[in-house]
Image (tube, rainbow, N blue to C red; front, side):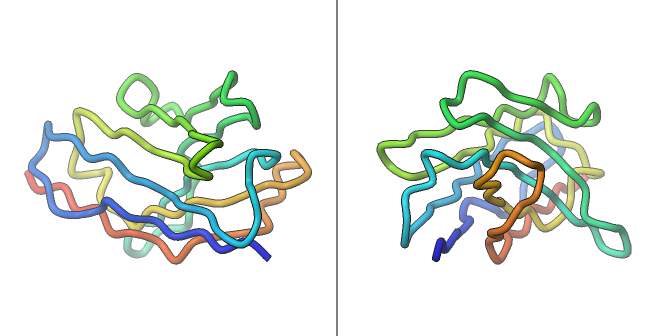
Length: 119
């Protein structure tokens, strides 16, 4: 069983940056496609970014492309989300998730970390 724990959230002013981490334990996730999602109050959870097993391919929601960067360190069993030029509309709980079969079916989810961007 895989456990995912996010960290790095917090309160930041608009235009600022945060780096989220997602540490996996219980099993290596180097063979998992990994993703980041977010859920704002009163809204459905939405896709943010996705990274291939090797880290060589990345995909982003149009709302964050050019501002966010997903990366991974398989030696540390950790996935990151670097968030720059943050906007108030980026405020949400951010979740990392693991897709072991590369089918866009995320079987494993973290508990989330709150990101709040003030204007």
